[in-house]
Length: 83
Image 1 (spheres, rainbow, N blue to C red):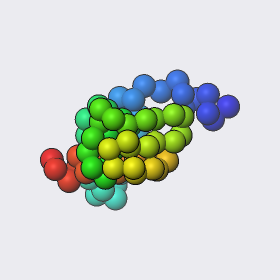
Image 2: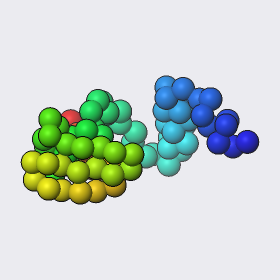
Image 3: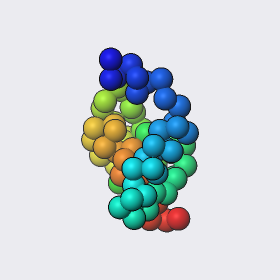
Image 4: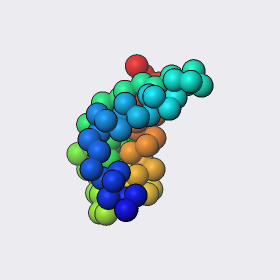
């Protein structure tokens, strides 16, 4: 039941919930463009020569292998640092 309820939320609404929960604790919430974060290598930055197969990410340019979600999370964090 919980998973179905969460899947019905739009990303915008989810962002609003996160902001509401963070506000009382003065936790800043920043939005980052997630475009191609799952296809880009978090080690070397290549995106044209990467392989993403389900939960497995592999970069043909540098040989880096990682869980696909962890790789994307690192890329999101890097984009936040660059902003």
